[in-house]
Amino acid sequence: MQAATAQFRFDCGLLALGEFLGAWRLLILLSATALGGCGTIQFYSQSVAGQLEIWRKSRPVEQVLRDRQTPGDVREVLELVQEIRDFARTAMRLPDNESYRSYAALGRPFVVWNVFAAPELSLDPVQSCFPVAGCLNYRGYFSEVRARRYAASLARRGLDTYVGGVSAYSTLGWLRDPVLDTMLRRSAPELVRLVLHELAHQLLYFTDDPDFNEAFAETVAGIGVKQWLSSRPGVEAEKFHAEQAREEAFFKLIIAGKRELEGIYRSDIHAADKRALKLSMASELRNRYLQLSRGWEAPGAYLDWFANGINNARLAAVSTYRELVPDLLRRFTATGENLETFYALAENLKDCSAAARRRWLQSGHIDEHC
Image 1 (cartoon, rainbow, N blue to C red):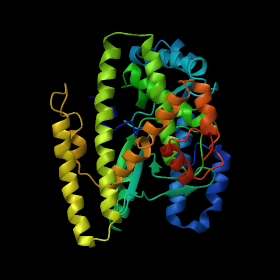
Image 2 (image 1 turned 90 degrees about the vertical axis):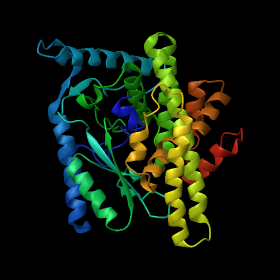
Image 3 (image 1 turned 120 degrees about the horizontal axis):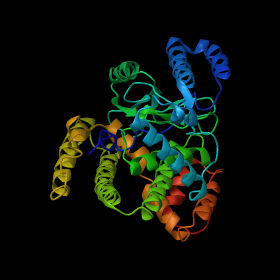
């Protein structure tokens, strides 16, 4: 299984700052944050520098395809992305703009590294809040070194941390998101999923509700991949569906364990007992996975995730992207699998709080309001 799959597709999301504002606005905002401290300035400055690097290296896809020096594998992926882009517009009713009509080669494995953090005895992620973007469950860095340095500073404060590489991020339509060389290692179905996920962020985004935003994008992407593959049956489709079934089973197992751990943290038992049960749950989840994966074609596919240690930040990351997906899929099914009705249903939640959206999704009520 590819590294991208082992990342559980946390390799897509939002950039905290650069996706919303042009470079000149970023620079103005940077100067306005001078009173926020050195750490704030350094974070915003690296966001500006990272976005400017992408702009500087971006070239129109048509130009790249005409260039005789373009490697064959790059040419193949760019042609596929343009096909996916048209599918997103016509079949998935996603925004039709200049995103993924350009290409940037960055020469590194990931474009951004996201840092997740959570308290030692809580699964509520530590949020980072920004102008316009609102609060996110992670903070993104264009440098892995800086991301790990920030994670280390949080760990010294007693927080659990997790750093995950990101292959792409959405700018919510404010900028022209390019195809990146960090996306090239994917199979065709995985590339479809990634592009649709990012475009879904452009279609619908609720400030201060990262759980809903990521789950909505994952839901739309999953629906789209199935539709894409339905007209392209074959070995690749069969392999992808099998991988998806294993991945869904894995997520179900992890989220069930996460909910058990939430109950422990919220109980009245002594903190020392909570710590002991936390360690026990980490071992128990690994054992449950070994049982689950017996008979799988690749039973060790997710063992690296366990080997790196299970902590609250890693579990919170899974929850951010996946916990609300089953509820959203049930809503999609209830519409008769009508995308436009599903999108309208989600849009009707715009005036609700994040907590109210979650309660409504999990309630099973058929009305359209929370």
